[in-house]
Length: 247
Ligand SMILES: N[C@@H](CCC(=O)NCCCC(=O)O)C(=O)O
Image (cartoon, rainbow, N blue to C red; front, top):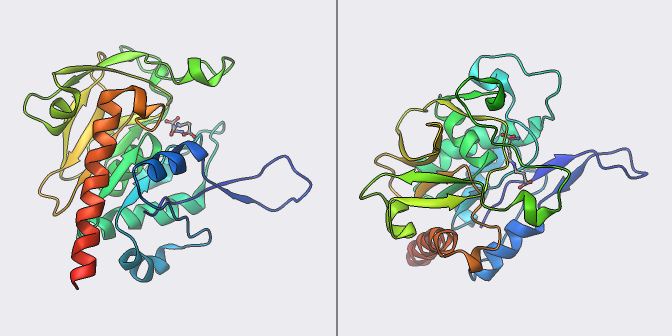
């Protein structure tokens, strides 16, 4: 499974950038019986060669923001950006959908899918009246940052409601951006109490195509809703594998 990399300038002696992937995502993919791959230097032009090699695409979260220029606004001076990842994922979303490769977005990944399909984002949710502060308490340890923070209301009959076993679930929350205008073809199927769209599916997609604003990879084995969500994606990836093998 392809997990597009993040890029950081780490505080190390080498002044060059670093390609990174949080172990949390790679471990979850491995626990699902799949093999995570990164393609560290992949650019948008490489997608047609690389996509046929994988059975799914997982767009992970990352502390960086999707650059606002991708939805017609100006980036904030405080933004941590990752232009290489933006450049890759804006095209990868469309190509994965076009080629029926299972696609799942987590946090930044949901935001990327939305923007790639022509949607826009709130740049600082907490500065908009009526919206909750969806950011994590950064000074706390990870278990507190990733603790369940609010409910999501799940559309009756949706896959989300099926995975949750009901129309409500508790989820974690670690983001400052959020969906403002929905991208073309996206259907909002999970909402936070302030109305923010937190779970989407791509209407008419030829394969699994979902995204969530929360982090189902976090301790998923202890959280049936997270686990079922990831298992559904993994099952779609295995189905894609069978199709590739049959070719
Ligand atoms: N920067 C965006 C995206 C937030 C996001 O993906 N957070 C995840 C942080 C933890 C991780 O690296 O997975 C925003 O703030 O909205």
